Image (cartoon, rainbow over all chains, first blue to last red; front, side, top):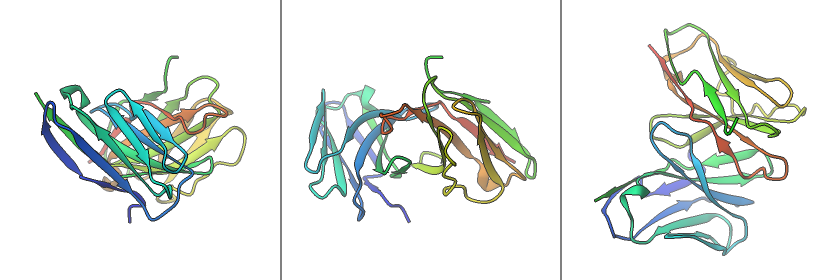
Length: 110
Length: 114
């Protein structure tokens, strides 16, 4: 059983479209992170959110942490081919436990 | 070094053989994690080292898996009597004191058990 459920699993869109990826859990986390991973490489941290209701923006990417700290969303505006990759969310407990979602594979077509 | 390095980058082995995977964390990073990633999937926590504290081994899937770390430097993940289901990408990450939520990942070792 996956502690963090991500949806959708796969997303193929045209350049310029908007999209939202969801990360849901029944557990409360002390922090939640979003990573992007390209083939053959390790994940790269995009953002960490720690406060319920927190919204962070990173250029065209907007991240939100749910009020109850159980879920999060990633919204990309005007997607570009360079956004293509595997997006992973991870929930943090204490200092030594991170649970990852199964990922959303995004393909942005030119 | 500039980042986390792992070796080998690829490993093909026969079922039943032992393998050793190596991770060199970023200098000064006291925390070190091992994860396993099946094809295109999320990461499965395996083990966590923090300084000289006892490691958190709660994610190791069986007693065939073990890991060691020398001080706050290199770590080795050993898989004994490999099985085909051990085939995956093994990722290592490290983080610095006070910034435990920011993990820096290595490129991974792709293990294929035939």
